[in-house]
Image (tube, rainbow, N blue to C red):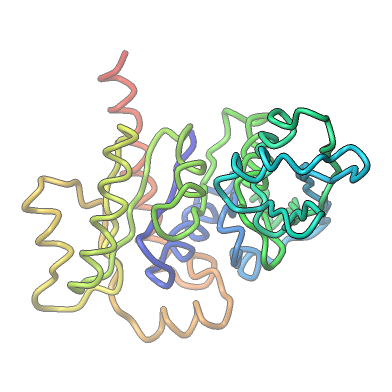
Length: 286
């Protein structure tokens, strides 16, 4: 069972929900696909870490073969190539490794070389296997790192897997949710939170994924995110209260379900509801 946790922006509580659901489940897998700023490992503090570098292919020029036709420059939609003076220049930082420039080059002046764009790590925290992807600063895309993370996870298809997605709704989020069984959308109780919730709401609809919402930082009184869900008949999976104690534990890098019985109950109930939702979806599609 693969479950993705999304939010329209950072700081909404996506990692709080992801980490504590995985910890609540016991024997499970946590995959941190927020490769620009992974922080789930700060809570799990995994042991026995194994690390692997992630490479992409980027073009390199054999200048004696380049006749300056500029077909590669015209082809590249990311402007990763330029011809100035009498030289072809490759801007490695914005190359998306599509390989198209090699295909259109009539003189075969372009070849490829490996470039490290980041790393993935695997460790263990009690019964939770923790996978973390980290993209080097300044790289164009984290998609190859996310693909590698999820490819490795396919080796354990029967285990509960919680995928901590990047914030927003860009291509790296799409890559993170494309094969999941269920999506959890985390939302804040503000008008700005509604705007961000709507972004991921539209995304999961586009991918035709079953989903529900967790309302975080709930206070007494009006909750625009809750109103948004009720008006659209969106399943509300749970409500996490705005709580100073929770904030202190979380900001100290503690996994709250391992520290506090109240939150152990809240996340256990949430996990059971999600499992039930996934099973209902599977039954309705069989």
